[in-house]
Image 1 (spheres, rainbow, N blue to C red):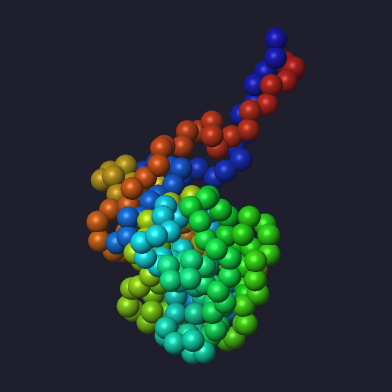
Image 2 (image 1 turned 180 degrees about the horizontal axis):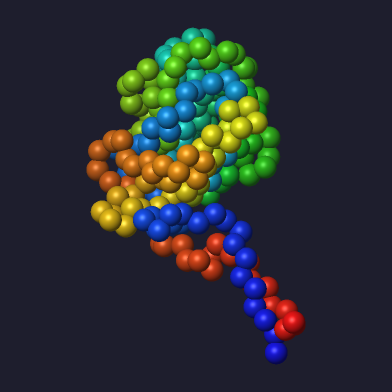
Length: 219
């Protein structure tokens, strides 16, 4: 005697793409976001490290130098030697918090890092004038790839420049050839693997997973 209303709560990808729960790197895959590292960038990434005992790994990163004090960097990495997160928004990194293999939401509001809504640290902010794109799953050091030895699952990624959302990445694959990557809902573009090999993928997301269902009285 009732009626069912199905209301989307998330945007739908174009028909050429199938949304999945996550994409997974195995150490040689990465994605160039096309966004310059900047002290005005903010990030929100839902991700899970799959191990902590092999090598250093990066969730996002773009920098001009590896030398502390002159990095010109926006980066969140996990450093094997210390077992800690390394966060940079300028020239000097902050080592903070022991990283693990749990699923987390990493939120960097410019130079302030939150994990699962809890403030972790504040990095010393500095103007970033070098033009190096931020990579996901690896660090771009002025064109050289590094800190990409780990396996990471990524469930979504959003990037802002000041208050403007410039990337809204959704894990997916292209139906025509099965290539796995991220679809940017802001610019309507698919970003595939810029590294070697292929990303793994999670299960397909169904239409009902992207909707709220309401049951009410019939009009």
